[in-house]
Image (cartoon, rainbow over all chains, first blue to last red; front, side, top):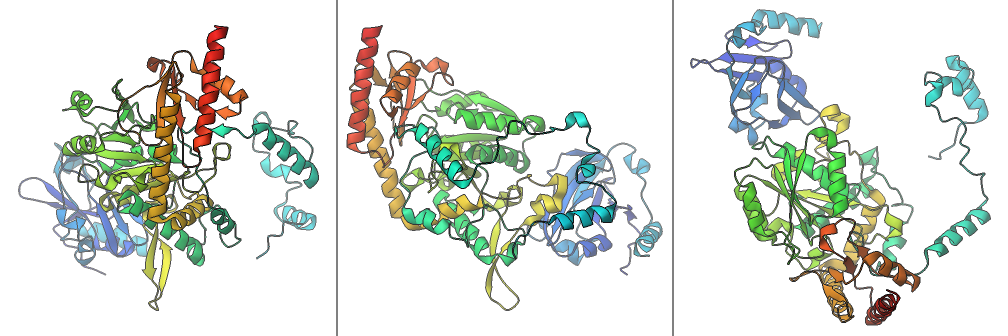
Length: 131
Length: 458
């Protein structure tokens, strides 16, 4: 099993959230998610400026066998989609925790309201799914 | 594998296995009020001899009129080889194969079709076909809304020079998806959209602009200026094109220098008979940057494990069997048989044959316009270049004139009054390469006679 970076927060739908010093967050999919999807061939990232609600589908990741939605763990405004992914979707397979999908400015209080998991709790989700 | 229907014994055994008494029992959850019951309007079965006779009588009722109707479906010569090959057993299926990769020949035909349509339109990618030209426009509008991320308005500019049926289908097919269609008027003198007409939309959030070339009146739009205007403003351009005209005209992939975003059209002119309105097929092409937003099936060429060339369905993650409710479209098949005919037609005609057909059709239409406007009370509605259709203005209502022509064995064109009441007594006429000078002279004489006769009667 891959190591879960302890400084990130997670969701049970296999997204991760990294808080940045400027108050925005980066959102990606976990190593477990990329492994389950297989080789990514396309990542459809949204335009900056779009407002999203927690739980709303905001990115589509397409692999050779499926296309899946990525749900925003937080409400807020998208400040950037990762420009690298347009030409290198495989970056997510190579480094799931480095290849962020979107940056988001959380709405007031959104970070506190979001029900994010610690690395240890997300590990329990994975164990339960695997079991 | 032969298809052998279930025997009565099979049916009885299967019903017994699930504990049902009859096939009817399987449907008992459908309320009786919603069920059709016995189909009383369906007549008794006929044998082959009887049905053959009935069908020839019905066919004779159509008559053998000399046809000058266009308006979206065109009578072109179809080389005999087209349908002789298309109806071979190996090709004779209307469908995309479900066990797709087991049907390499079918996939190759679709791949060749996509390649030809891509070359013809000057675009980068084509799908395996759509139902018809009108539904292809509706799908193109939905695709443009998905593809244009910079626009949030789902607003499509549609000139009234776009085929009225296409406009109605686009509105109806997208009615529940929040699309807005704004009409753009045309110049009453020229019968085309003047680029300056679009200025009123500058500064608005517009998703896409539709341009039909040649337009519904047969006139040639200033496609370069219109495309340039839209693309400078992050407005996607949807071209609706006649495939025969592309034998001569600039392909949409080159309009305005940059080309359009989506090009669609009706494929019927490519080897498909008029056949009382269908079945026809639509085609759809785009740029690579939008390919994941394109609906429909796409066949790709690839290599198998042993390095041998083969054909496969590709980019299927857009499609409903994978993406379910979020698929780009519910289109999951294509008009396979008609696409096969079109592919054979295009391969027999070649670029030169297509150019000759287009040039001959244009020439015949000019001859027709020249002949008919010599009849007193008939003039051309618009000035400017046209392809193989023209709008004429009569000095009296068109419908009775067309009826009188019909009694003389001529389908004289389409009365535009129901769609364009502001245009006056307008008649849309068409001549393809299948019309001879004698045909045109016959129409002129008949029209002259009808107009004189009606004048006396009035």
